[in-house]
Amino acid sequence: TAFGSVCHVVRCKSIPGIDVRHKDVDLVIIRENTEGEYSHIEHENVPGVVESFKIMTEEKCTLIAKYAFDFAVRHGRKKVTA
Image 1 (tube, rainbow, N blue to C red):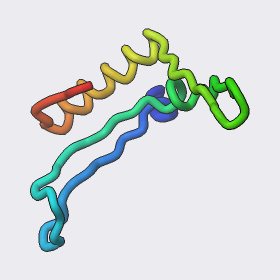
Image 2 (image 1 turned 90 degrees about the horizontal axis):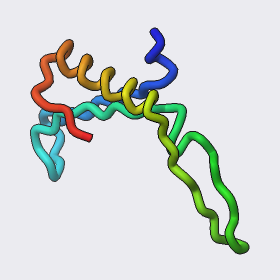
Image 3 (image 1 turned 180 degrees about the horizontal axis):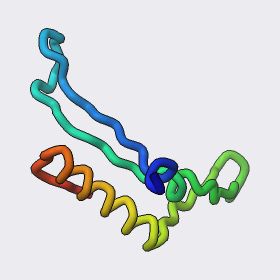
Image 4 (image 1 turned 180 degrees about the vertical axis):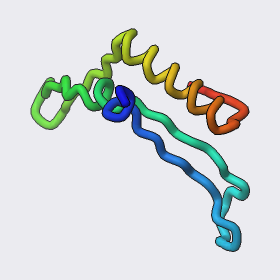
């Protein structure tokens, strides 16, 4: 799909029988994969100090939001947050 190269989906769910701090975790993280941290817009202000810009276009923000809402509907998820 068109979303395949743009959206990265990570599912996080507790595994019964494994002792962890947070019980009953069941969430999905959906990230945009081509802009933001991945745009590689960086420069070194002074030696050893690097500044990195996170720039997102309206097009990609809309695309990832639509994908997240569609994913939530398809998978019976109750909430989408940003």
